[in-house]
Image (cartoon, rainbow over all chains, first blue to last red; front, side, top):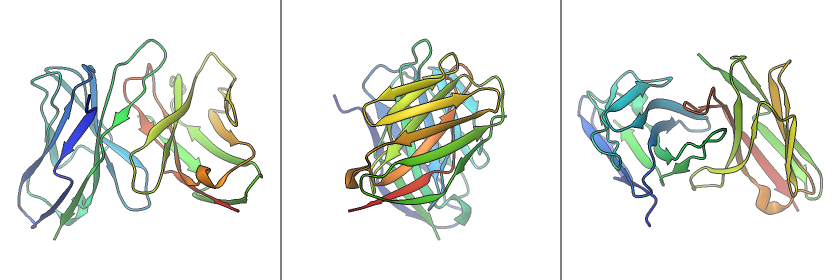
Length: 114
Length: 111
């Protein structure tokens, strides 16, 4: 049981390049999330999904796209990378139960845009 | 949308002392309030959560209190130990779907 797996762990992009951060979970969780964590700052919600085929915007969705074609996978696409997207990206999943939602986070993907 | 403010941003305490971290939220409909701990270089992990129908919850040295009227909730750590040193995040959500996090508090516990 690997939990939440993110790839790549590290990536350097040039301004204007595009890339996809991969996230997969093997816990059959219905909810999945993408957060970004800037240095010394909190976690900002980019996008989330409550199930396959359903996605919704979070606090900072501009410059990103997501898809959820399967329960297991929730990739995050960066189009036209900008220095402001330099951050650590965390994917998380959860099986929401009445009154609680415990997120299991991946190890994070550190992205630098130069 | 929901906005969560967290204070202080850094907190230093002597081992054995208590630590208190406070959060305020903006959406009065929010009804679920978890706390996550992130050790250096690690991923965040849930340490305790509380629902809006409960005023206080304890788990060993950790407790969380909620004041719905004032829209704020707090994390209390008693008898702090060096291994409590980490960044702590509060969060709030309505019906638990979309968790909005605070900006984090870096707690340092000195021996």
